[in-house]
Every structure is written in structure tokens, then in C-alpha cells.
Length: 387
Figure 1 (tube, rainbow, N blue to C red):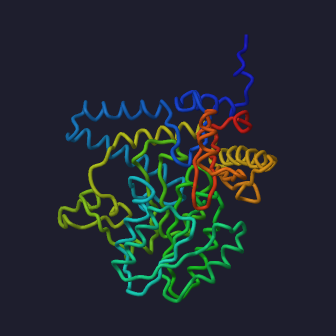
Figure 2 (cartoon, rainbow, N blue to C red):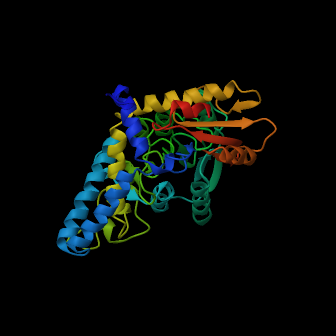
Figure 3 (tube, one colour):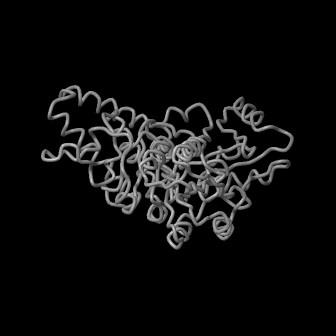
């Protein structure tokens, strides 16, 4: 006799299989992928297997070194392919913030330059930019985009905020609080036309693993993302893609042996590619875990298929919320990705989050702007959207 799962479409069956491999989804309705994605058991087992393999080979023996190098090279190729760049332009980091910040310290700043930061950026990146400005005697400007929903609005605000001495624009691909999509390729074109040709730093925390990345990465000088959110990998491993023009002038500021080119004639020479921003010994089994998470997601579909599924889920939730009396969505149209932010009239976001937590729903609250954020992924069930 056929089981119920036998009647599922291939993508539906893959989603069920992936959900069953995620212990975090077993006893709750999880809407916080933008904070951290649930780790599949297969990824946890891949890390444990990798740890054992390294120990069996001898952690500082030549066979273990070869094993680790191939592991790192495999993940570098996989992530670079998702970004549409050669592997040489991708460096591994611990998280989005380190990927955003570390290369900035090595750029040739001039006193009086302007750092233009959108009002929808993560505090970690904003704080780092302010410290760079303090040390290098730079000016900080604000690019107001949180209330923008159209490309022309963002570009109009950008044109007004740019100054002759603007040296950097910081803008997320998808704003982490509202979920609004920013027109990164068009912004990049504007900056190339600017006399000062400012650097473009893009925070990809809420876009990598959701929307297609190639065009935005091509427009950015720095595109940073992490493995522990929408890729559902382990925390502690991320990456940054660096433009060719930044590689021509950028220098590393935190320096270690992984950034060196292994040239016996010039032992202190940095890599000529993005690897110069890697520092020293890392937790290499995390690489095996993230590789397995990428494989688990690929079983659900290719990036276009997964985006369509995410948008179907977030759009359904967005429409359902708008039908509820006293509920306001921050975006006036269905989200481009998986983030759905909303307000409940007469209730503070913390009250809403706590009330929903008592019903087994995991969401996140924000204070600027005041809202509650829900995140829909490929593993979100249609039945959960009405929970």
C-alpha cells in the first residue's frame, strides 16, 4: 500500500524530508530563519565525521592538511558559483559583520571622505563604520531607504545624499528589518557614474540563500553573507566576495598565515586574491557542515525553484496578515524574499512575540522600526502560515 508521502510531488517530498532532518522544526512553528536557520542533522553528522577524519589523519599531519584544503576548496567553489564569480574573489569569514568590516579598514581613506550608510543597516556594521570614520577623520551620512518600496525612490534618495567626497555607500540587498529589496545593480551603476566612484558595500545576510545573487554581487565591491541563516548551516562560517578593483588597492588589516601566498622566495607576500583577507586557523569541520546544508537545500530545487517557493510562502503570509483587523504590514506589496514584517495595533512588538511564543511560534521583534518580523523558507509549511 502506498504511503501518504508517495503521493507528494518531488519538491514537496524533498521539503518533507528536509523538515524531518531538522530537529528544531519538530515542536514549534519556526519563523526566524533570518536570525538563524535550523541545522539539518545530516549537516551535524557531516561535521562530526569531519572532526573524526581530521583526528584519524592526525590534526597537524600532511594527510589532514590535504583533506582540509580540498574541503575548503570545495566550499569556495560552491559559494562562488552561487555568487557568479571565480573562486579567487571569495574569502571565508566568521559572519556577515566580519566580512563587511575587515576589508574596509584597509581601503585608502582620505580625511574628509563621506561614508554614506542606509538607515536599514545592522548595528554591527554601522558601529564599525562610525569607528572607521572617527579614526580616519571621515564624515558619516545617512541614506534614508526604510520607507522606500520602488527602485526609483531609492535612486532619488541616493542622488540627494551623495556628495562629491562620498567614498563608500553601505546598503543591504534585503533590509534586515523590513524585508524591502534594494536595487543594488542600479545603485552600483549610479556609483560608477559618480566622479569619486565610491565603494559599494552590500550586506547579504538576508539575501544569500534566498534571492539570486549574481547581479548584485557583480555591482558590489564587497558582498558579505553568512552560512548560518538562510543556508541553514552552522554558525561561525561566512564569506565575502571582493571586487577586482578593491583587490587592486585594498590591504588586509588583521593578518595571519592563511592570508600569505606560501611563496618560499617571498614568505611574507599576501595572496593576490581575496584569500588575503583570511586570517589563521579556523574550525574546518564547519566547512563540511555548510557543504552538506547546501546539498540538502539543493535537493529541494535549484535557486530559482527555491526562491519561487519562498516567495509563495511569504506572499501567502503577507496577504493573510493584511486581512486581519488591526494588523499592518510594513511592505505594501508581497516581499521579494522571505521576510514579512508587520505591526499589531495597540500592542508592542515584544508583547506580540511573547504571545506568539506561548503558542509555539518563533518570531523576532524590532524597535527601529517598531515591528515583528516573520521569516518564511522552503521548509515553511502552508499549514503554518495560518497558525
